[in-house]
Amino acid sequence: ACLTFFIASLVLSGWPDGFVINVEYPFAYTTDTIMTLYLMRREIEDSYFYSLRSGYPFGADLRDFPMPAAGDFLILKILCHLFGSEVAAFNLYFLLSFPVVFVFSYGALRAFALGRPFAVAGAFVFVFLPFHFFRLIHLVYTLYFVVPVFFYFGYRLFMGAPLLTNEQRLWASVLAYSLVFGGMASFNVYYAVFGVIVLSSAAVAGTVARRDHKILLRGACAAIAMTVGAVANRAPNLLHTMKYGANPEVARRSPAESEIYGLKLTQLLLPHLQHRSSALREVAEEYIRIFPLTGENRIAALGGVGSVGVMVLLGAVFCQLVGRPVDRRLVFFGLIFAVLFVVTTIGGLSALFALLVSPQIRGWNRASVFVGFPAIAAFFLLVELLFTRYAAPRRRAFLVPSGALLVGLFAVWDQAAAPCPDCNGALRRKFLGDQAFVQHIEAALPPGAAIYQLPYMVFPERGRLHHLDDYGLAIGFLHSTTLRWSYAGM
Image 1 (cartoon, rainbow, N blue to C red):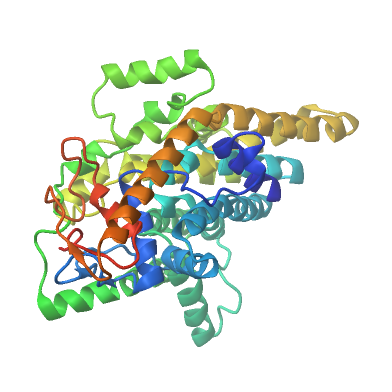
Image 2 (spheres, helix red, strand yellow):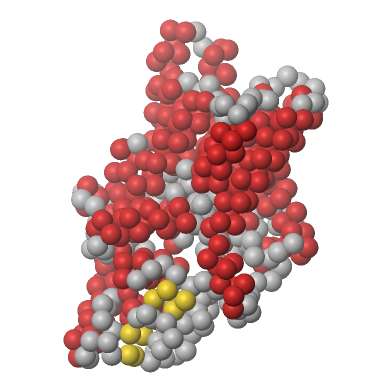
């Protein structure tokens, strides 16, 4: 776990700079990253929901724009107050997400009875998915430790086992479900939606296979607890809307966006766009040049291990359908993979959800990390089964650890981009240049002075305006301490 922390730092900052944690400038500084830093600065000065220094003269009230991720923002708030800097909190949150995700992934893989060497390798591959680095722009998506936890509970449902202990006591069960599943719903609303899909699919499959209605009841209780947790995360927004009415100008989304931001199988299997191999990188770039609907889903690549794992899952489903015996763990992973893909792919059930229920959930490609876990787990399960069947015990004692180590090293080369000193230098100059510019303004004006910012930009989610990135006007607030700014009013 500690090793993943420093490898991630080295990937971002290079050798040997990565051994000293960067707190001078953020690892990313554009569009949604600036929005995250802006929100963290608000938490340091006022509160997440309201700021007096931005949105002048009325202040910036965020209650019209639901961002139900209370768990993530609580962690960010703690880090901000511990270090007194949103930059330090931003970078540490990202680096700490690696050991946290590793620990939970390793625990889940061990719960699936995977041997220690392959459990370590599987968690290592999962934590270094390209998703982890590409999603730096959406910082809260990088703490995806809930993914293996959902699969752990899903497998217990699938096998007919109780989800939690002491389920005979009603009040103890209600409290435990509320804390565990309601708590997991506090880490990103998308992960809560995908988690409900995993648990519901597992509960239905377990009920049909075992003809035990208690399995369906447990799954329903978990889904209800997560729904209540997600609603509780939105409580400030809902109370604000009940009192003042809805704001039709904020976050208007079309059902068609579920197609634009849907998942594509091809992009799960192709190399990622910053691959160390120029030949593999060109393949990914060529696909994007030629084929349509290649937007945010271009960062959904699973890497070599995950791509082979997808083939393993499809093979497991095929063998099960034709009556061949298949390990129950592979059957479970194949089933969840199939359901997730049918829901989240372009033209899948997500389009019907957007059309008939709500278009607010649109980034269905973000399920790639949920697809990645069963694919990686399936790869190592199959390898371990083959070793157990065909390799002598004496050879296994050497080959298993060696193979696990080699796959882990390959994953870092295959899935993490090479450090870019020139990119880091440009990023540092841009951030410090903005900082100096705004501080020069602050030195020239009296404390509390208000600045009207042009061009006018809608907040939030305006999109790029000429050469000005979305949320670009937030740099005034971000780099000052006494000035008030007109940007970020709703």
